[in-house]
Image (cartoon, rainbow, N blue to C red):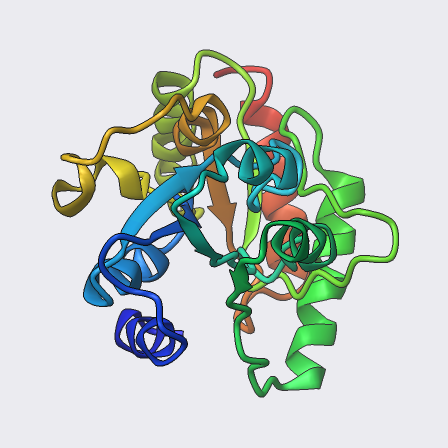
Length: 228
């Protein structure tokens, strides 16, 4: 949902000034912006380092007497842990604002998933996306983690890929809690968010990426794993 839609949803269910809304910092800014549009205060919780979605344990630790809602995000096509977050919400009487299901091209999703399975088995030297047993990852992005010294090594890796004709993108250039609109909020430690922002990189698996391109992508990445 957009920030405007989230803000309207929060207002409609009576959440506003004086209330706190728990949101992720790793990902889009819409949840935090929506909370502010409703007059509420966004509270950032850390992520699960495997799935990169909100950590249920971090959300539970962030709940206070002022907490009114939680807004998880399905990140890069991976589903947020709404079952465990739902249990926390029920325990504390919180609203859980879930993303509306998107219409999707099932054929394209199946192709992305097939490309992802190929890269999962072919890539070495990077940490491929984690998928919980039974989870359905749509792979809107194929986001890997670059081992090493965080941002310097990740950025060097991205530059080396670009020099070899591989277009990769920094998955989340700046966590939301570091954006100007949200810096004034007292931010608790978000170590997993900071680590993910520093070492993640999205590799291309869109409709223009065929088998030949995937094979070359894996070969280039594996070669760089020994050089960077």
